[in-house]
Image 1 (cartoon, rainbow, N blue to C red):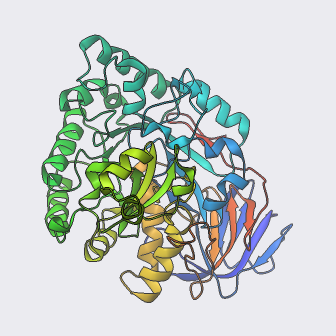
Image 2 (image 1 turned 45 degrees about the horizontal axis):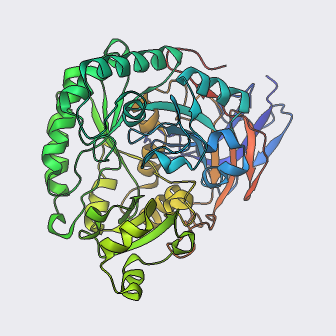
Length: 480
């Protein structure tokens, strides 16, 4: 057999959670054609991976990359330089489509101005295919996006007619290839929605058991009740549930991960449920006065009326103005922020749990973003595997690849195995590390040596090739 590429002498961590082995990987026509001793086999190209780990390309299961995907390889450097080859978009109830509006209400403004120009989800997916994305795209449709499109007053539950319109839009999106549904009942665009509204709107998910990813109604004092609501929705619809960026916020709630993880373990015996998380003790979203009292620090990530506030401490700004942080937040809105309100012990408990996948939740259009946008995956490998020794390397890679593919039903991805897509990352296990910080959030990570998307070299030693070899994955349809 003539290979297009043989990656030689690497330590193979195949994404299944199995122990590493020494093996060559042969690639042909965008797929893994052979794994084993390929010495002497003919190939158009060979790459020496001596001293490096060869693993499946990382799957970022929680992103807001809906618009970045349309903008080309350079826009997705923050993903490729981390080893990410597949992203799941449309999370937290927020998707770019189907919506046509110049100034969407927060948090739908997470994509920046002018992005909501798609009347249907099908037209968004078609535009995405024409753009030839740099990574593979798995697209969810957001409940809040549907509410903004169809509910006249977002401060009340949807009427029967409005629910029917949202349900029809969800059905059309699923037929076009949307991978599933997401909710963000925490946010003002959806906080008035009842549990019954979500179930009624989500009814089209049931036929194909499409997943629902849920930003819970509460991640603080009421987190248990919010989790129970999410589990009830999943049972009613008979679909897999993903709890988005699972965390515990507020000093009074530190340590409660033991309680929430026990609840998840019990639920998982009876229904399909898992979670994702990012490896930081600070979160980031729209700037909301109600979040401030739970936080020891708040950093402004962007502000439309006061752009110069980006990167500044909200508390420092408030002291300079001789006003309360809540007053300053109102003056800066619409705006985004990083909130320091989590406990490191909870982060580690959640990160190490067998039901946890890795997702960055990065916000690519923030002026001064949370460092998770550039650092999530190398941070897991560097800090939590090599330094803290929270996880074995094989387990960490599994959380980024095989587990994610399994939970989202991404057939033929997430493992280095014969017949699978050649989404691959080569990294140095002794050097891989995040470099992005809260002060310098755009710094690229170290130790990621090469990234292949569908067998095409997408990144080498920090340089993006702009080959744009990603695929738009549509549920119910084979990839090209």
